[in-house]
Image (tube, rainbow, N blue to C red; front, side):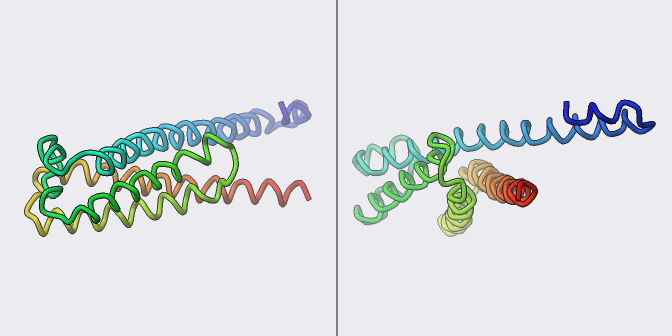
Length: 162
């Protein structure tokens, strides 16, 4: 352990506790971020595929009530946007590259969910979709916060190495 050299010092146990907490915290944050990425990526990926390839009537039958009211191009565009969002959420974790993409994608998803909530309010569907919309918004905001926090920690580590 990196604080083993402090064993003769009187506050060694405090330093060890601090080191243990700081080492566990990033791991728990990474696990939470990974779970949120997987959940959002899966949900938006599925939504994107369904909106891109299913007929509007079939989408209405599975609960996408606005699918028959919207122009087909808007439904397909929404599907493409959901698929792109899923890729942007999952790619940083899958490729271990482009880590800056996670907070940007999360910001886009949070904005998308705010628009969706407004859309569902206008259509009088908030009682039906409100809980899911708020859950997706919360997960998006968590990924935004977590992505920014891990980016800041990475920059601090780089500064310490220099």
